[in-house]
Every structure is written in structure tokens, then in C-alpha cells.
Length: 277
Ligand code: DGL
Image (tube, rainbow, N blue to C red; front, side, top):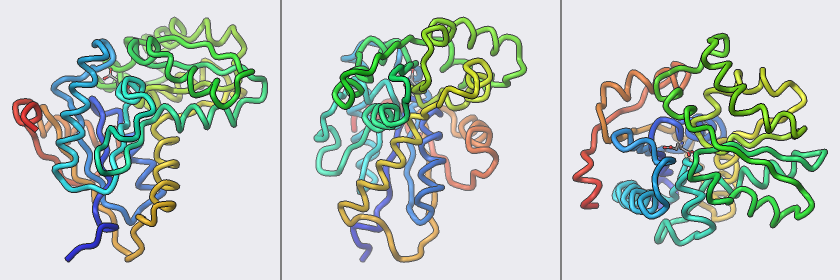
């Protein structure tokens, strides 16, 4: 009989963005199995109402938990900011979003006390990143903005920093934050690290970029260690993915998103199945 520690870590996002968290988890915890769900049939979440986002998130969590996991990570800034700091959202298993880990990482990283935050419209509207940063460091100033075209650009694989369209969109969204003189910028949506090179080229080397998915992966490791739930049996972790749209398309995209080293499984789950879970 397998022990509780041997259960997988469940990770979900509205689409492919949460794979930036998965990639980091695989680096930090190579012995852990991961179950990933990308709701590619209903992406984007960031343009929807908080009620709709929470409805989808509850369905995503129950789907992930039907696979008997030991922890759930919402690798989605939009879901994390809608849920807020409600650790019971995952039911019986520990639940972690990306907002608190990224907020803490930024509060630690800033030297000049000026932090920029970019995310989806729903994330920025929620004020969740400001809230966590001010809880830790009330004196820090936060300037935030939404970047609505970034998610569709990433889902389309349009991330090349030498592409004039990519450079123009980055400049258009980030000019105000750059002029404010921030020294730290939170990529508050897990899709955005795919645009990291273009963003960093524009912001300059002096600005520290915080990937919200990577920050969550680091905290997930600490949380599992604290709870005595890390695997210690020398197992090599596997990655099993589920998508609500085409499995073929997901398999093609995942190679790009994981930098070519994906060797897991991909299965489709219908939206009807999600709604009834
Ligand atoms: N990766 C999601 C996030 O972190 C994308 C949001 C969307 O679906 O609009 O916010």
C-alpha cells in the first residue's frame, strides 16, 4: 500500500502558464510525482468576474483532488487573487496560491522600496499583491498594471524578444512602471515568465523579476518539508497532465513551455466532467 507521502502534488492553471511553476517544482523536488491540469478550453480566466473565476477554480480543485493528491497549488495569479488567503480552499489537503509567495519574495528583494506588479485584469483589480506586500512591509510603494494581451500572446507561442510586436506590446504595458523607478517587478501571472527575456530587455538589468510560479514552488517545498510530506524513497518523479481541450495541442505546446524536456502523459477531460466534479 502506498504511503501518504507518495501521493502526487496537484497543480492547476487556466492554461499552460502554470507549467512555469511545474518546471521549478521538478527542479526543486525531482522525486515528486506531479498532476497538472490546464483548463485550456476555458482560458483566459483573467477577463472574467470573481464569481466565475471562483466557480471554475472550485471545479479545478475537485478534479485535481479526485486524483488523490497530498497538496494543491493554484499556479494561477488570477485564481490565487480571487481566493485570497483562504487555506481551506483545498479542503483536506494543504492549498497554496502564487500571490503570497511572490509578494513575500518581492518584499525581500526590493532595495529602494518600489515594487511593480503586472497581472491579468482580475488580479490587478483584486489588489491582492498590494495587500500581501503591505502586510509585510507597509512602507513599500506598489505600482501595478494589467497586461491583457500577454496571456493570448503566450498561449499562441508569441514570445520572441526580437519580434517587433512582442517588443511593442511590452513597451506599451510597462512604460509607466519603468518610469516609476521600480527595482523589483512581480510577474503576477504564471504565463508571463515566457515573456521574461522581452520584459527584462525592456526593464533593464537592475530590475529583479519575480516569477510567481517559481516563488510558489519554493514555498511548496518548504510547506511539504514542514508537514513531513516530502518523498524520501529515491523515486523519480513523473508528470501526468490533463487538459480540457485537445490533448494533441497540449502535447505540442507543452514541449515549448517545458523547454523540450516533457516526457509525461496528457489526457483530455471534458468541461462537462469538470462541471460535475
Ligand atoms: N496563468 C494565469 C494567471 O496566472 C492566466 C490567467 C488567465 O487565464 O487569464 O493569472
